Length: 379
Image (cartoon, rainbow, N blue to C red; front, side, top):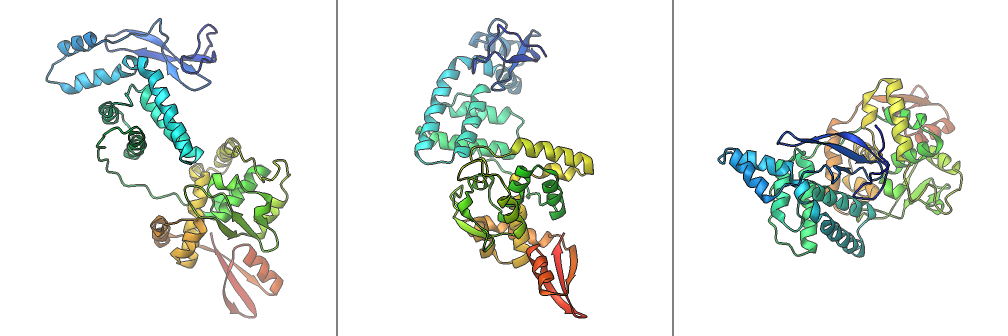
């Protein structure tokens, strides 16, 4: 792909644009499409863009069977992004105002970012954010999953509430997928294959069950090496602060981290996602295990919740561990206990020191036999 120096992105003004295929129109014409490497916005230059007017739509309706409403809707949506481009700046102003109001209400940065991205995407699809009917048209014609449509409906509901727009949202029925729970051995393989900083971050997520945003805000003062605990003092999504008991391995890995971010253990402004994704792909190919590609940062929170539910069968313990305010949010992990992995690693201990090491490694005591203490840990 080649870069055209004289061409700039109409969205961000960047000159880092590359060719991105051909845009084909219903009348058989075509135009070169471009992609901005700065904001990943796809566009057709004004010089080659075909504008569609109301007359054009009427001509289309005359050419097509007027009884075939789907054909007319398909044609309208095909050209919707070009007919609404003149209103894009107005949409951006509304989105900016909406983002500022969310900021003043104390919503998390990640929540604000997700909502802005969804509304920007709707605007680029040609939807008029002040007209709920155009939103419903996009929802009805785009091939999105039911979960994506439900999420967009929730975001646009918040937008309508902010600007006092009357809208009765469509009902979208979908069954949420069960979270992917990897084996502990698979998580340990990922941790062992990552670099020092990423491995420590993953180990902290695995042992605490914290969200990614909660973990990157951990401070050195939150770690107590004497009683092996980590305090989650910056909870997200309205969760509660809590103190979690962790393994000696986690404390040791954190203690070995360089103190390059001041009071924070990790970079408080950026999680090591890129390094993790590269290492995950490399390890998945090396071990020929595609399941590893399904592991994300939040997967380790699901793993912690489900394993603790299997060990204790106590929903209130899991509720506190994950910082939930409502027991309903914890129920999913209690349901997963019925399908838990019943395969174990076994080990024995002759002395108190050996038993303590096994307990610190996650083993639980089972029974005594032939002057030995038997321990086990789920795989």
